[in-house]
Image 1 (cartoon, helix red, strand yellow):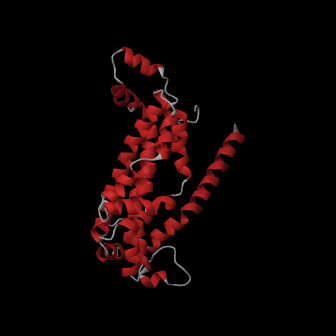
Image 2 (cartoon, one colour):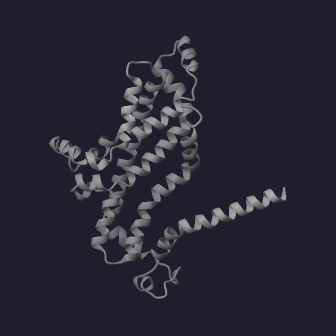
Image 3 (cartoon, one colour):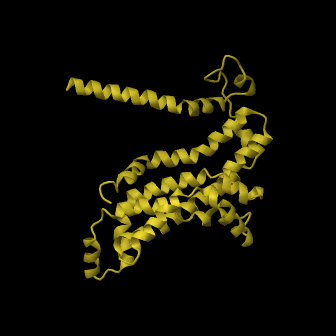
Length: 273
């Protein structure tokens, strides 16, 4: 028993040290964001400011419309997340509970899209949305990403663990396929849906290349583009770091809140498939 406790203690200390090493750049950047320019350039470098200030955060909001950018990113991220949940869960439901011709081939075709880099299709997608007149609008940031092969695969793996007899029993009781999907299947799929939600939200929030290519109007730009504007408008590294910390807060909150569900959802389909 003592040996087991010692092993657990050693493992905990090791995880703590590794975690601190990984988190050190973020912690140090946060500390620098509370310093003035003279303290940042001071040698030897200081880890903690002797006179912390919020002026850098205030200047970040005043230099560029950071709140507007965060609102745009929030609308985009939520729209993409909701869209991926709807399309992925419906597609996975069909692939698991329905029998139709070429089902396996179609599923393999869906999975094969995961091997195509986004950069390969970005020009053709841009030409398509340009011909539709969608440039400089928020829906151009949302609609092209409302489905996800990763999401379909993730939810399908979870649905494979649900007995098909459950659907048959529901049909005997007069339940339609859609009602079964809405009232029975979705409520028991909370872990995997939460996992996909966090995965989609963080991925959408951190998008850079597509918003840079399709949005020229400052009022519709996202936070990742906003940070590049902050770099060009402000000469202070502390202000840039403050802006970076601000735009990181929503993703950190999303991950902290859903960390347990993220792990549970990612591993839920590993027992069958």
